[in-house]
Image 1 (tube, rainbow, N blue to C red):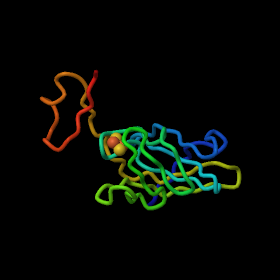
Image 2 (spheres, protein in one colour):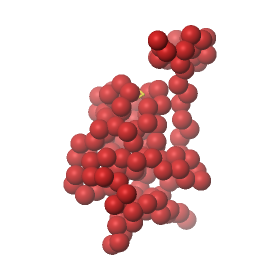
Image 3 (tube, helix red, strand yellow):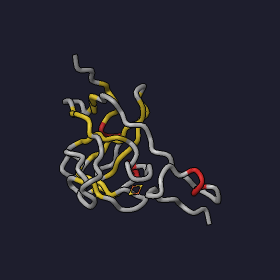
Image 4 (cartoon, rainbow, N blue to C red):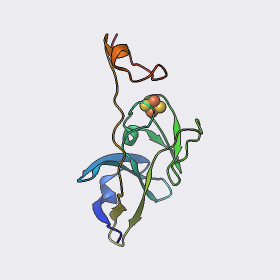
Length: 133
Ligand code: FES
């Protein structure tokens, strides 16, 4: 059985922007496009955990605010790095502007390593480390 959650009213999200919401299952990002659609995705970028709700949006995509990777809001597919995608959740608007989401399994946030010890804690050589300086 599918479980649908009332997350917010669309008026709480400015057109062309996203907002992060904390559900029991975890955090999600909800976007309101200029076309009048709403999309729900995982909250954090799969690259290094950038907060996707703070990213710039086009009609159908979001740009991660940390390193500019682009993701399609409907499919979750990476548009700039095809091997990287985000999880999207089924969402809809009802007649009163309420945003309903079927959250399913929400991916955990990837850790961000910052500071002098960051390289010692990074789980792999390929993981990027953000310098604190
Ligand atoms: S954290 Fe999103 S592109 Fe790096």
